Amino acid sequence: MSKVKQDAASVAPSRRIRHSSVTFTIVNCALLVVFTLLIVVPVWNIVISSFSSSKALGVGVAFWPKEFSLDNYTYVLKDKTMWNALFISVAKTAVGVVCHTLFCALFAYPMSKAYLAGRKLYSAMGIVTMFFSGGMIPTFLLIKSLGLLNTFWVYIIPALFSYYDIIILMNFFRQIPDSLMESARIDGASEWRVFRSVVLPLSMPGVATIGLFHGVAQWNDFMTTKLYVNNEALYPLQMRLYDIIVQSQAATQNANMGHLVLDTTSRGVRLSTIIITVLPILVLYPFVQRYFISGSMAGAVKG
Image 1 (tube, rainbow, N blue to C red):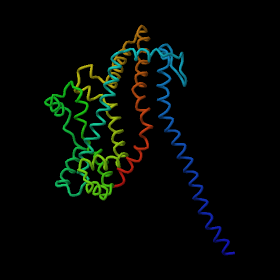
Image 2: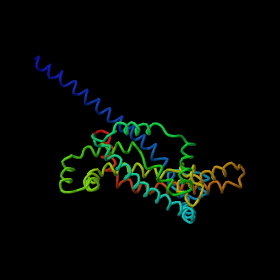
Image 3: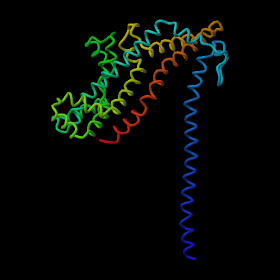
Image 4: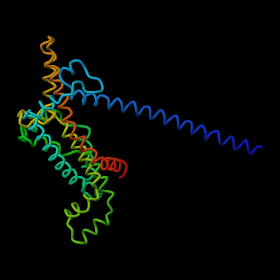
């Protein structure tokens, strides 16, 4: 009889654990659904609004396009400045990712070696840059003195260094067995050859991770243009989107009905420009997602 009571007493806690686990799963799923809807619904509204006519935008749209129209996209794609801005955005993102990744890798490789002289000092200096900057005005004066104002390289050179990305690469480089690099050196490989043929290929998840980080940052950046570039031929897509938003906000200040069509039209152009701006990142992200997940986890946890 006592044995039966002991078995019943042991079963009761397990049932409570299962019940609490089911409750947690239900609550967790409900919260995830809510947060997903908070993200998806506004994006979906932007998409369907961009495919609606200016008249429908003046009335308002629900969950499907009203008076389906491609006029907004036609207007944007016919604008030659948009194509030039797209070229600048693609060029500065591609060149920026390659230069930034290579520069950080060249810095992180010697920093990953314990025998590097002055390594602790360099690390302390790098950590300081993660929390403090020179400020807007000193940075502007520095870029002006370097002759980077109104040049394409103002997008590339100031963004070469990021100690956060260097830490990620350092952790990857430390995981590579020294025996592999010693074997390459015994075969006659120079330090550059070891870095190029052994270290970088084995650290591709980390390289892809910081490449994605910097690529998204370059693609979304417009403050660099706003502060350091006056030449409209060097405007990227984000700056053109900023100009469209400013112009549309100025148009909405006119309260008379004669400006209603202008307001709704500018809104449609603004929304279609947002879709065109976001689309390349959405297309690219699935191809580098697996590198991004493994790279960010390994670079942050291991070391």
